[in-house]
Length: 345
Image 1 (spheres, rainbow, N blue to C red):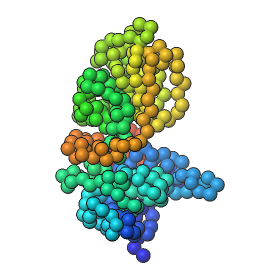
Image 2: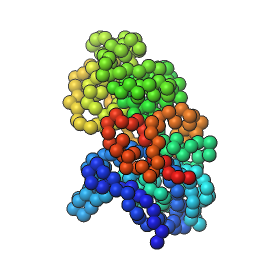
Image 3: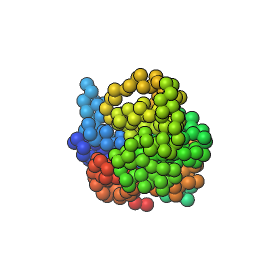
Image 4: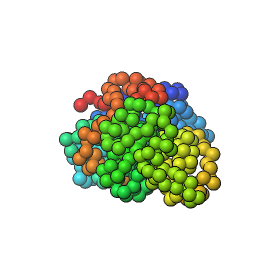
């Protein structure tokens, strides 16, 4: 029996690197050799709880990790069309019939190989050219999340936007907004190095919200408007929450002009008491953004075209042989921006 290395949840805040059987593709499947795989906040969520409550009676069981892979096809089933050995591909983690890859499904992509079940080009997998490094291609999934948030915002070129949170999703949203031609994009965070990255990828301005008054700074940058009662407010049109903390919601409600929008893409770490009266006074629209209903492969060609810009989002490239260290970094607040684990070619 051929085996491979695969990462799964272990004890709380620990991973286990285990030997598992190497998948054998059937006629409708393909086998992908993983060359790079990003680490996401969802991975660390499963680590914090020590697995997933998917066993009998809701008991915790190990979860195979990894849902941001890029790699190459090494075997193709006889019924798979449009794919050949050697193709460089990214995948749709939600396109697997046995469950979401790396998020409670049967398979995880933080492994030597990944089985692509019922493989269909354009639905479960798409091909990218060799001009793009595997580590940058592995950003495809989180950049689809960021793109959906921007799509949900319906931002127009003349809009003024602020993004709270300069992690990969927030920075990805900044890139998509600027590529869309949005006039002015501000990124707010509390970590100086992340704000430097925001400027490097094209943000027009940044705010260190630990040191600056956000509302006053936004008024300087976006001009002064008013809420429905005529009270002065910044001229910001769209607020994007890519941080997931109550302070973002509260700041937005306090700052929003009449008709502003708040797009929530981050998972809220704790529930926030929302000032509904404040929302009423600005007619603030709250828009939730979840996943990537259509965007998973819509983003691929633009990542190819602008791959050098997207590469700036990666702060750490860690070899698979040091994957324990990669997850230690991911579990340490502020230690890394975006970690991509690389595999031998």
